[in-house]
Image (cartoon, rainbow, N blue to C red; front, side):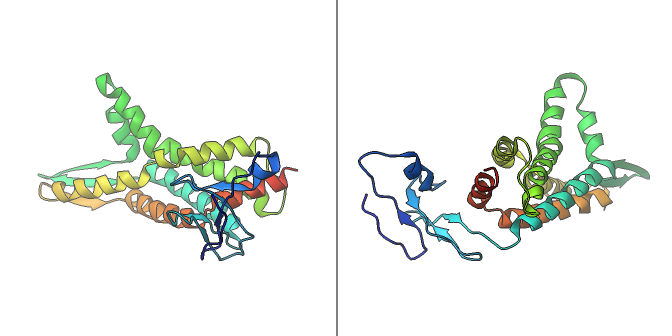
Length: 225
């Protein structure tokens, strides 16, 4: 492949006769189409895109790690609040029933639905909490300019792989759909946990906009030396 500059700052990699460790270290693969690129120095606030599919390869931002740590810590606290406090209150025929996310999980904890309860607990609560904690562990020391903690590289790799499986936003969409159907059968009152969960989803979305995986990996590599 012949190397040329693209308007977004990234250029496809040429194919040398043989690769050295330095050559491989300089190559960046597009996460969407696997095209290999050699990236120039990308300034804070700028973006480098794949020349083939235009996926953003890197988008460093000044102070991004500090923001991610703060948002991850906020999300961690909101998730704990969403689990403990009442999520919904249903009133019908003079009877009132309050339920939390923990109550929903425990309802399916017996009998053949145990696997469902474990899946709900893992995908909605445990995995997001573990991912928030992992991001704080990896990024907090580097946001202060320190060396990364012990096993920071495998911890960040696990956190990155868990991202598609942390389905808090899918859960809140499902709840919104269910509320439309339940509203005609009973009076529904939204508890503090519901709003905590909605806020958590919005903060998580904002946090992901600050996350530049390539920048984190390069910082981990540089600070670990």
